[in-house]
Image (cartoon, rainbow, N blue to C red; front, side, top):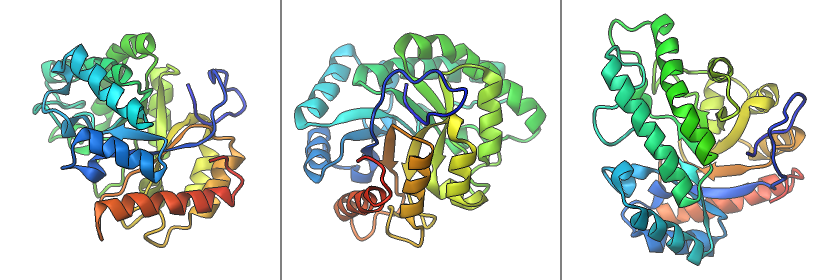
Length: 292
């Protein structure tokens, strides 16, 4: 497992420099082999996969289909870093729903996605999916926290078996009414009590609650994955966020792992965003002394 190395952290298995990934939905509409070839040609080390872009029922894909996806990525020269947008499809999944059966089905789906992630060669699953975790009418935070902890604990055996880390993603209040801060996500991950449940540092979301650099340093021991985007929802370097000090903050906490480009606005066009975002990150992080 990779991430920040700090006092009290004893679960890092090996040293790995920062590697850059591209979220595949940026190029949605392209076929998978073309996405893989483009990412490799531009210089990305990996792809972070949104499963719904490949199948409406990713948990039902055959071992042969998964093997082929992995083979095509590796043949092009990229790895799969992991998955995100986990609960978009199939319909009806929800982690804090008052119906125990719905929560159980959601846990079962996440267990299957741990296998899907590992079969593709990935090591991380980013649990964002704001619509599938937001508090429904009548569900308070006091109820939602044990709901979510119970759901995650059911997934733990498969995470450990497949060596996949589930990363809770704090998101701003404009996107969800549950788990909005690094503090909340870190406390929940700690309450689950497993090295296989950690936190992702998403720059856009960090900007919504304070200084990204301060938050990265404060929660160093919890961070296992990083999303690079601007507060304006574009790619890194396409807004007013300065990524050089963010790169320095990651260097300061000895972060060793994936930094994944995750924009939501693809103007002027997806290929330009993907290519220029990586160039911007390499320039900013390289000048901060972070290995690239």
